[in-house]
Length: 132
Image (cartoon, rainbow, N blue to C red; front, side, top):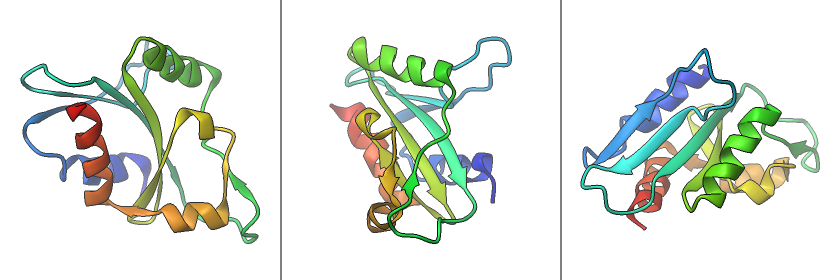
């Protein structure tokens, strides 16, 4: 599996009441991978940067740090400062972990494994985020 397949699998679980925009911008560095908002315009716009890892570290104490560029980090921080929701989802196999912006320096492999969520659960997190 690759990042785009993982993102697509999450998007399939998001209800039709939420606009899903998978962004592919080759001219503006740092823009997040996806943008979400309710179709009725109510709620909070949400930006998500997706990352995918193929293997977990061997030690449970090793930090899993999302590999964000400086521009990606700035985009997410600016979105949050503007009152929008922003987070990172790191995929592994057919599950993923939601990282808040204050966790971008990493969480342990042990914590990562405890927090793994299914595609449906990840879609529910996004849906709840735009509902607020």
